[in-house]
Image (cartoon, rainbow, N blue to C red; front, side, top):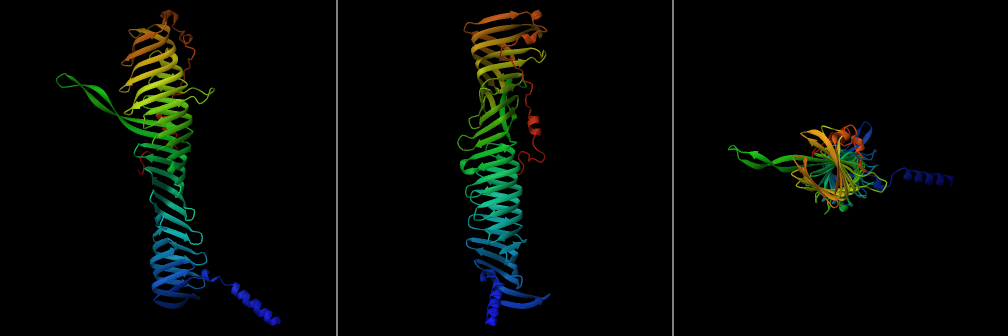
Length: 476
């Protein structure tokens, strides 16, 4: 009885020491040659070779099967199939114990949802996972992705790509150091030297982290975002002809809009809207701004800045040597040029004299509208409790100041100089001669007076781009 028990235990041990049947690989073909190499049993199979392991079927021209290792070297026209997935390559090595195929001879994977190509790759059949390296390209009906390395999780329909990543979808081009892409929902997370570019509107946004929801046409950049838009505009200029006659010509000008903030969002559907939040800085040609909240409606040519709450700072705007503040400001563009600027609630305009920097022309009211033509300020209208201080000059020499009040006012400019001031509704005016003004300029200020000297510049905003950040147009 003891002997029978020992024999039974031995049989069980032998059976358990071998893998289950689907863990073995089987290789068949037109001809077979058996060899012993370095003490290892090797089978060489030629012609119409078929390797099977469970639901994995691989065909090729030649196979070298290593019996003890449960592995095989596959050579020539290698085609691996599992369910709806097909992998093709010229050479591959198959690891039976890991149920894994490896190739460095160029590979293509097609699972009827997406197609991958790469210089090399590994596929784990039990895990439905692929790892591709070097010149990786993904194609599907909505996107094209390239990178140096990519991991594909087939059942999750998820990809993680790293190094020189670029994805094109819905007219947008996203580049990054690393990127996670959910193919079914078309959601993208990108990190490191991120940029998203839309050739149609010529807008590019940079940052260090991006979330893109293609089905919602929504993008969030919440680390170090920077928006750049380059536009071409035309303005009229007088030209003298050869016979002394004058004519007007269109002069082309390149305008660059630069916006930096802590958080930036974009909606790319019918509204084409960009929102910048927290420590927003804007520069465009002669215009600049600092504020906490900006909406840029690109299709409508409209930029709006808000005071986010009662205790928050007002938006500050600069145009040439003028400074504007108010609870909210709207800028209207036409053909990429400012045509109208509107300031609402507690509006204040300040202009510093270039030759006498201690002298500030000042105007305040509840609402201010500035009108532009060909990029130049032509007139200003002020409404509601208007107060103003204007310094007087005679032959470019200071000659006192005028302080006035009214219900509304209109200021006309000629070649950037005030040519006419009109006051409406109970106007009152006082004149202070030069001897009462000189050296006492700061005593002549309106209640809303505040001079800001932190005007942002384009170089300042662009210089904050991290080293190695992709430049505008790279790989577009």
